[in-house]
Image (cartoon, rainbow, N blue to C red; front, top):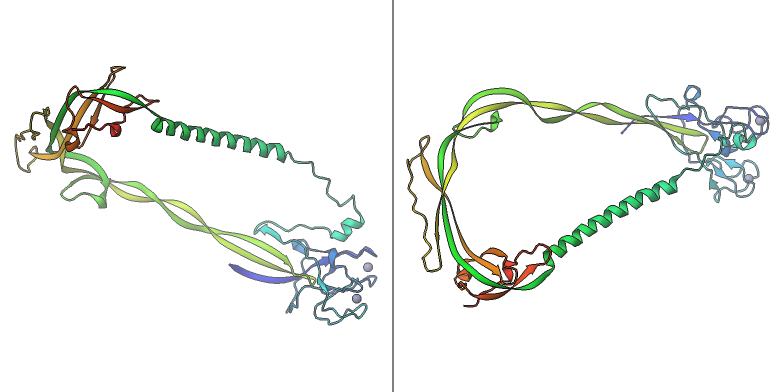
Length: 354
Ligand SMILES: [Zn+2]
Ligand SMILES: [Zn+2]
């Protein structure tokens, strides 16, 4: 997003007579000694010294004459110094784009040529070498360590799951179990957002509470950019992006009572292979849908085989689908696989042949 865009003159210093702050577009030659402008000597002015260019028509960056190295506007077909055609001319070097925060200021900079000429005074002191190398290698060393640790963990997990050894086991017990949950209607006191209360609930109280945040625009962040056009002028533009802040969003929170079915007890029925599996008899103390009434809940069944390791005498219980479970008989000796790291029995490895 570009709010405004204006063109200003670059400045340049004459390296022959020392004249400072000549205008890049207006003064193609030094106003003092007449020496031609060196495009390499151009620089951005400080904010308080910028000179606007009115109705400037941009024809492209200046070109350097292939014959005499003088620079000329692209408007000229031939070099103004030696008359050579300019179609093979090279665009002059431009200065690096400047960017600043809207409320900061662009400060004065010296021309490249001047710095070269009077090197030492204006030149910045040589920068101390940064300890980039050691810092980076230290960081990557930690990263490598973390990666190695993660790899080790994954490897260990695979070993725990996959590494198995053979074992001889004996069937110690074959049993089924069936269960039925009994649920009781209870008055449950909870809280929730008031617009999300379950049907039939009774509101007890409400209060304001924070319910997430809203993103709200909170001003703009603007940057001012200066782009060297290469013809003695530069373009200054302002680019803004909206800034956002999080604002707490308030909502109504309700305490409410609602009738809820809750598991209150579980009925169980057990048996061995000789007994036909059956469901426990469900006797409800108060059937119906009143407060304190009971109803039947979820049903579950399991067909278990208790297995003993013949060598270590350790016990494990495996659950099987009913048809597979029927093949197990107490006293049966079988081959199985045990996980080496945990000693757990791999139930999937056990098959009883009828
Ligand atoms: Zn001069
Ligand atoms: Zn020339």
